[in-house]
Length: 166
View 1 (cartoon, rainbow, N blue to C red):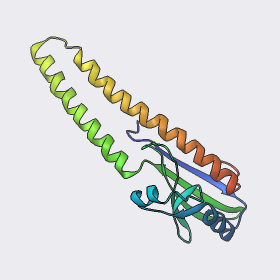
View 2: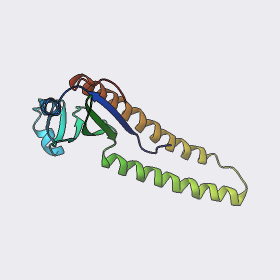
View 3: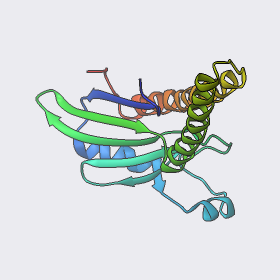
View 4: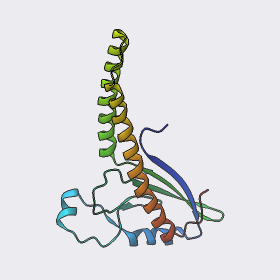
């Protein structure tokens, strides 16, 4: 079981490498610091990030709060039928740090309470609340990550004429 949401998908496209880079450049603007993003609300493209010759790292620009939207990293590979685009989606580093602290703190409290219950040979329902906190954070991060990753996959599929999952 994966603790943090993550997706790895491989697509094929008949577009050339140059055409893929051109289309990515048409939809991606340079990444701005958080402060500058709020000060300059002139967002002309749906994604931000950077594109190198055969690699890109982007994320969808959203105007609402979703800390669990994915960072999309892609790598282009030439093959006999065109190009293969290997895409990896993961949480941004701040969401990973937050969830690690959350899981660690709740997990530590769970172990302490469980040890106490085993030594005293009595059941305390507070342990179920701790499990609920872990389940809540886990399901929330998965749901909101998947919501945004589905939108990004749809966008990329249309723009890059992706043919299917390999």
